[in-house]
Length: 363
Image 1 (cartoon, helix red, strand yellow):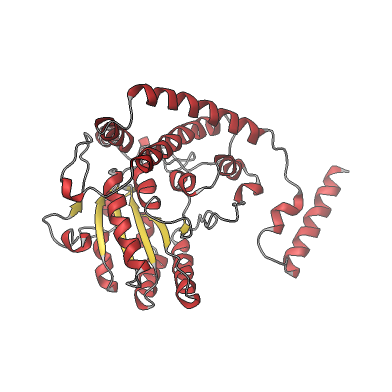
Image 2 (cartoon, helix red, strand yellow):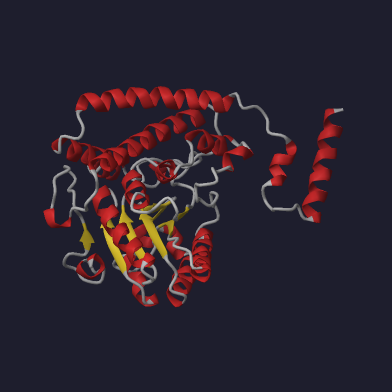
């Protein structure tokens, strides 16, 4: 098992890596069995995520979108993990999982609608099992464990994949989730996207633990640290964790060591608290660059295909956002309707009060 071979408490072989930063295979025996068409599909999602993310930042800076949480640099940690799950499994995000959302089936239009401030952005197709965006840090992990408990109780074959940042590991909900997932043996896979910075707090000041993955040991569950910019390593670790969960062997904690190349959100200026040299160093480990080289070496991709795909995605993203900008104002009731199956009395009261306020302002 990978979690035994790459035990986070051991200094030797501590972090799982399959692709080095140049895109070369480190150990052929570790390469996961992924069909060629799926490899290409994974890369395309990562590429779309990168382009959509870059443009979202531009749209926000132009005053055309509300606050946005950039995803640049974390594409492999997300696509590599979600690609190892099935369509019937659950995805429980925080707020920086653009590439995972796209691979799971949340449309770019709806993602943009969400960040645009349109309530309809939180709608998901019925066959897409994604919980809504969760901004309160760490709170989504208890939801994920609850889903896992429900899956066990109802006898469903559903694994739950959840994400949290390195900063979230300092919140109580993280530890509660690990404890309950272990105690109740839930089919839960928790991925820590250790992007080195929780806003302006570096991981080095977040914990005294040698790794974040080793925190799993205290709760009696397996933990593994992987190169989060290596999509194959993330996939391999998650695939094993998902298999364990589906077989009734309980949860796994995965620490994906990656880097946030952009700001924490569009309200943040990272130049205040981190050095350009650090960003440049991590840019050399870009997950898209190394995966692209791997695919080209395998004869599954080419520079020409890449250029054409980028042009196609640029056009697609621009057209999608133009459609979002033309969506208009949502009806007032849409702001209130989606919280509960039946609106409780206090929410009805708030709705009527706000409706009356708007009518008075408009008169």
